[in-house]
Image (tube, rainbow, N blue to C red; front, side, top):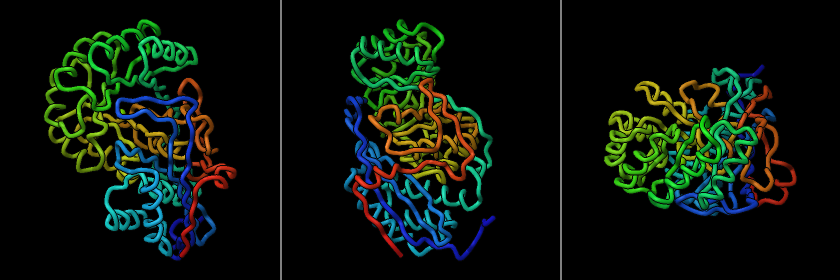
Length: 375
Ligand code: MG
């Protein structure tokens, strides 16, 4: 068993831009998406081990476009090659000090470095992180549409066994309330709803909507207001009968500390693409746990690589009690394989292969935009 071979160095990094089509557009308040564009990195070290990571850059949240993410990934690769990949703390600090932001791209490198470390230790990632394997139940997500179509989607998801529904909102009080009522009528009582307004309400709309939805079985409402409006978010929380979750307002540890200190929200939505990966996610969760804020592990449009990394992290952090990891269901075809098993009811099951266990299918490596950086 090898754990700390100080002679280990990064020989080569493969970078891929995966364009993953959806069968039909997925709409949220911020955008309508017909495909995902995800960065995958494969880090080869001098012991013959390959660490694999993924980041999903949504331009309307992290400010990264596919083209800029691919270019940034190449610049970061130049910083990493020739160095010891097992010194994760130092490597990630070097990436951030070389070029700020670009959190989804740095997330791909973070996951790849943790995957590599776990493979050196011959441990599944959750075990490396000190966790306990368990079955995770992700919500299934309903994109924005007419009330009737959203209710029909909800019915089919519940028929497939879904235990939790996440509902995307953002067209004003009347339509959003009609949507939630229609979905509740369609699925009956017993399935908790997680709402996500994706910043689209103003303060008075949020107050009215949350009051009106108090008896509709809503577990939490994500990001009712614009990401910058923290004072408003705190006022909404104080009046709301429904717990409030920060998503786009929460990126890094500094945001987490400020939101926790000001008692702005009840929940954090931690996404690896926003916080640049597992390393910062652990710190954000620790800040939350210290003040009694519970967390969701959410995602953008990750394939099985990003979703598996998230599931392993979740098994190491009991305070992350909610899972929103169903993005592979939006794809026409998943370009990746391995990692977690995902069932239509939202059950995510981990395996005991070393690392997170997922990789890009060979045919997708062939057909995707790619570049290699060597030492
Ligand atoms: Mg959200």
